[in-house]
Image 1 (cartoon, one colour):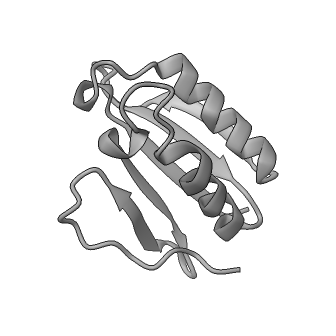
Image 2: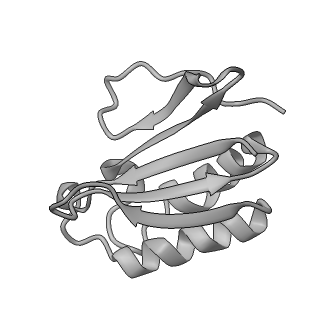
Length: 113
């Protein structure tokens, strides 16, 4: 099953409500019929990883953009403190950068069905 990964950097948004962010991600996973796992990616615990597995990555990305990234009920939007990547047509060898907190970064087109 294809994967989409979101790394959240809480230090970039100190007032971010991490528990509320987790609830938003869980709700998005349910809406997009995706599996969600959560982990900490570095020894200092400064990067939270939200890993999704879904048959329809395009639908999942649509839900995440519409209901998670710009939600301001959890503090500053997650868009300000996150990076999103997903598998491309050839798995992670052709991985796509869908979102980066540094708006100067070149993004790939989102996945299609």
